[in-house]
Length: 507
Image 1 (cartoon, rainbow, N blue to C red):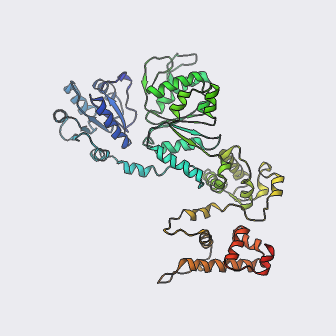
Image 2: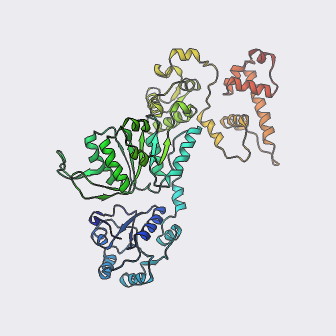
Image 3: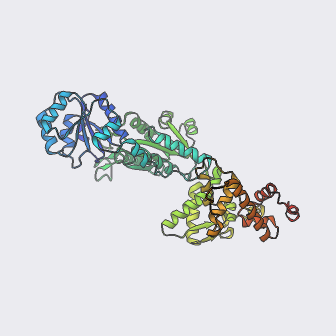
């Protein structure tokens, strides 16, 4: 396969496999199979192999050879024996080519594989992990924290698009975690072993952004004392994250559109085209359709980027994730040597009514601040900065009743995989049992088993009665002992027909 500018083609890492074939269509089909194995294909011709690959200090993990047409077999054989002596050679073309390779480098290094072939067959031939193993490693991806429906939808979209090279446009307010989502897409994709390169298009002056993206040659402009790679070259084979794409100037939008269409760019000060193989993920907090209407953003670029949109929800729209996010940030701070933060239910209730204009980023900053000011102790409402506990809100809230949240540890019970799920009351009883410090409080399972629901019913009723006795019949106090909302406890009292005169008088 003949490529322009072969002198510029280089092996960048040992994760690249070279495809050497004079049939471009077949070479591209082989490249698709290599990508399934997380190997980056390099489609190359004879001249480029001699000039670039052989001279490179990095060697590819495999060389796949189809039909070569007219080539210097003596030169090729010498190169394969001397410079690439440890690289396996897969012959997938004609039998005559395979025989010529065996003559040139010996049968021990040549592995025949009939074309077309599947990824599993190639994986076995090259002794590299198949896609199933790669998917297993992709499970360890840091998805956005939360159990709300909105975040579950985002996580599902990330998993679905990660395996494809489609362009992704991540939308959402500032601080919602757009870069975290972009990294999750990259980490779950076949490109995860290649670079993830991020650039904030709004933080770099328009006149310098072209050099940052495409690189420049020495003397291209004042101050260019040496040649420099751009972000596209640095991200080769991986993912380029263009943050705040809505702030990019119109002239740069035109140049970016050309790269996305042709996958070719030029360094500033040089007219030699450079091919690139990067996945583009863009993000913005702006409404790009409004920007298009104002003439501030190109419509053709928008449709090129908006292949697979992902909307990051604001924190105020998924406030039920607040306890999990607090716990996540607390553990992260503890891992960095700061104090661990533990918020009381009262503090969580107050924070749940804050509008969070800075979204998750603002919450992370608050938890870091509290880990410094109040390390390793429970943080109540009075410990929060005044901004988060306005007097009008405190007067409006009933802080003596339980908040609308449960602790993050309790939410894990919802994630248990059970054939016949417990209802809410069963989970609460299980939570009380799991939190108990007394081993004697856990009943022993009889040899013949038991009816778990009836058993939990009895335990729950007994615990509620103990709480009422200890609280002198006051429902609100008993609810605090059981870590329940008062209204929830009242519903349980009705269910167990335990509403005595004292309790009834509080309703």
